[in-house]
Amino acid sequence: MVKDWGGKRYNNLNYFLRNKFGEKVFKISLDGGFSCPNRDGTISKGGCLFCSERGSGDFAGDRDFSIEKQFIDIKYMMNKKWKQGKYIAYFQAYTNTYAPVDVLKKKYEEALSQEGVVALAIATRPDCLGEDVLDLLEEINKKYYVWVELGLQTSNDDAARKINRGYNLDVFEEAITRLKKRNIDFVVHAIFGLPGETKEDMLKTVDYIAHSGAQGVKFHLLHLMKNTPLVKVYEAGGLEFLSQEDYIDLLCKSVCMLPQDMVIHRLTGDAPRDLLIGPMWSLKKWEILNAIDKAFIDNDIYQGKTFK
Image (cartoon, rainbow, N blue to C red; front, side, top):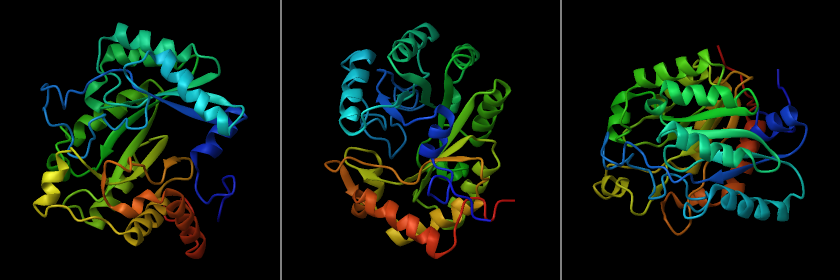
């Protein structure tokens, strides 16, 4: 049976947040000035092959400024379009639990002290969630809504090695088990179009996420950006871009596979125009989102249709 989520056929983030907080809620994307163990030599120096020079925080604030100034500047821009609402402090760039816990606490509290903040979102790696970090997040979760975002990208360890993810699936499983024990929600990132992956591989990842106990999921199209290690793979013929039609087909199948209580935080991502090498069709974000909505209606697609 088709369920309506605020005019959409899937449990979208805007619908979830409006129901939870009673009004519009915006994300304020911040750069906490952190690094990543997959960049600084702890695990690797190359980083994940697709990751940009700004640690996937290309639309976050400027790390040269304080958390407070980043927040105020982005909030001001948001308020030009939306005059009122609440805010999520979203630590997006690099690995946002990769620092001593007293440093994390100071930065998180600086963000949470800003007027109108109701939630904290932390993008990180599953191998960077020590007990002291989890203690901190559990404490904050008593006063604010907290979720942790984990870049799984693929459930296939062979594909993960190809992109230099730097950890195996068992590490991810251990991390989500520990998050569940502390009742901290987590959101899983999946990327479609990774080198060497078939559609079947991608849908296996979706099936894995569907049964992981995650509160939410983010779907991404693989973007090839300048100055990333993935460029060499592409130039050597090791990467083929997904077409818009194939991506939408994958999303149609994926949304059907998810439980209806799992929030879809994103159906497709962004890449800066000046850095993007391909696929170039991904720049027309609103056209793509409209095409996805149309495909859902035309094919009678709705979230949970094939979930078992």
